[in-house]
Image 1 (cartoon, helix red, strand yellow):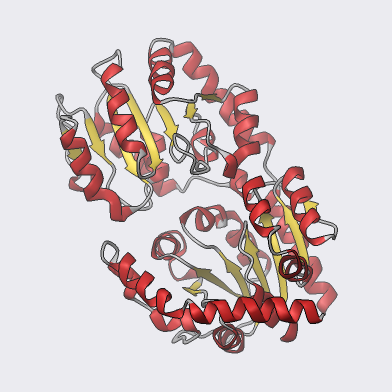
Image 2 (image 1 turned 120 degrees about the horizontal axis):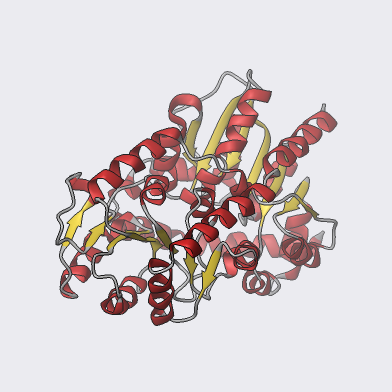
Length: 424
């Protein structure tokens, strides 16, 4: 116990030393994304919204977690109609995705930084009956304060790469006791569960991945049909959720595409990079149009810049082949499940440690092709453009792959319900 206190005390002292950087970070990010300067009080536990109902709290850091939680939010609203769902976020893009997906059906605020006073304010203000951290969010003062305040706190849909596990292992006492402070941990895969168990020395169950339960919003399917009409009858290649450094590699490799009639749609992961990517496309000499203008795509346009937020399902609906970004460079990859759920053949790079098992399963069942260089990406694209039967087979394999791995939402709700019943 004393070692835990000393570890957490040191951790908290470091947080205080970093406080000036916190404000600098917000200012720095706000240069390209002004939303970072909004709701600053919430980041320190000051809130204007409040609920007069019992609160079920889910922490969904950014866009990916917020979208993945959609079926869970719907299931909880159905099972607990007299409760208020509270979503907390860390990024403005996560908050914007919440507004787009759920509107007034939920409350949404920023989770405070992990300072004891801010965490105490948050818990005292909302008084959640239960809290759920999704994926890899572990905040040690938050966990400790939930214990002190007798708030149930679960880590669900948990994932932990080998790289992240090695980082956590550098602080064994803090991490061990912090994870022990959670009421329950359920991981996406057996490998994730084993890595988490090795850090905390307790049982960690496997629940599957919420992302497999994703249901494409009807409005996005309709928008996708509209986009396809704007794109025309050409083959459409989508580069989804690309990260910094990848667009340059991709644009250079696109010079070797065989079917010059192919329309490439590039959707950067982060909206603050839209203008930078537009400049890069122009520097490579491609004729470009912006999605935000909502215009019919001209016959000589080579690239559409997907400079819109929250429309990824629409882009997947409108494309023929999808490349999943974050995987050309050692960035861990992005979620390929959404593209598979819409029956699209998937291309993905070799750097997929954040989605390792999903990628391995997709490749193994024939839903995805994996490569290790941008040149191999274009070779795979050329192959699929020339082989419609292979594209169809991969798309069907993707649908089967998603259907076979669903069920995590029901599992999560059962775990939450059991925890609430045991508390009662």
